[in-house]
Structures are given as structure tokens and as C-alpha cells.
Image (cartoon, rainbow, N blue to C red; front, side):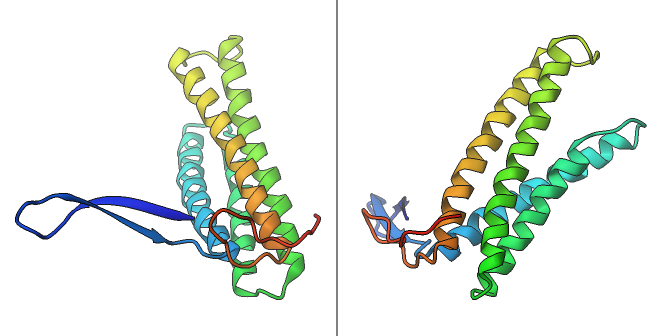
Length: 169
């Protein structure tokens, strides 16, 4: 996985120069990267769900985002304790199910408002929930793919290829 950045070089003509570098060279580093992003995102929205509950009522996000938090903690630990194969399996499946749980939560929110079961929210909330649901499904698929590669014992990421040895969950 590589990233190309366009930067202004230090010369007086200030021309743009491409800088390309590989930042994620192993599946463990990919698991750490998406794990950190999902963990931070889930912590933010878990706090938001907690805030929503201070007004009385229940927000399912308090549970669904907690499952993402737990799955990412297991994933991060699996990258430190690299011989713990069970942690890799738990992380792969827990992340998939947790992200799908969050997506379902958003879909339920959109459906509740769209059908009139919940009032006080407009079409913007339905659109927000629909976009978030799709985003969490994409996160589930992508993270499961990389977690499966990590679980299978795949090592370095090589340009133009997938180095993973066959493995199954």
C-alpha cells in the first residue's frame, strides 16, 4: 500500500513534486491502522450515544459502538502478541459482526424516522443514517478482508500482489 503526496519543493520556483512512500508494509500494520481509525470513530460515536441518553431514552449506539471498540482492542492486541492465532480469528469475526451491527443500527434509525415511528427528525437524518450504514458495511467488508489476511499468517504486502498464504476462517 503506498501513498503519493504532491508537495511544493524547496526550490525558489515552487514547483510541485510527487513523493511516494509505502506506509503499510505488512498486514499487521494494516490491522493497526484500520483498528485505530475504527476505534477512534467508535469512541467518538459511543460518546455521542451516551450524550443522547442523558436526555432520557435509549440509544442502541451505546451497545453497537462498544462492540466495535472491543473488536478493535482485540485486533490491536493481536498485532502485539503475534503468536496468538485465536486473537486473530476473534478479531476478524468480531470486527465483521460489530461493524454490521452498527450498520444495522443506522438502518433501523433511518427506517424508524422514514416510517414515522420516530418523530422530530427530518429527511436529513434519514440520509445521514443511510450514508453511515453504507460506510459501516464497507468498513466491515474491508476490515474482514485484511483481518483474514492477517489471520492466515500473510506477511509483507508486495506491490501488485497479495502475498497471503491460503488460510481460512
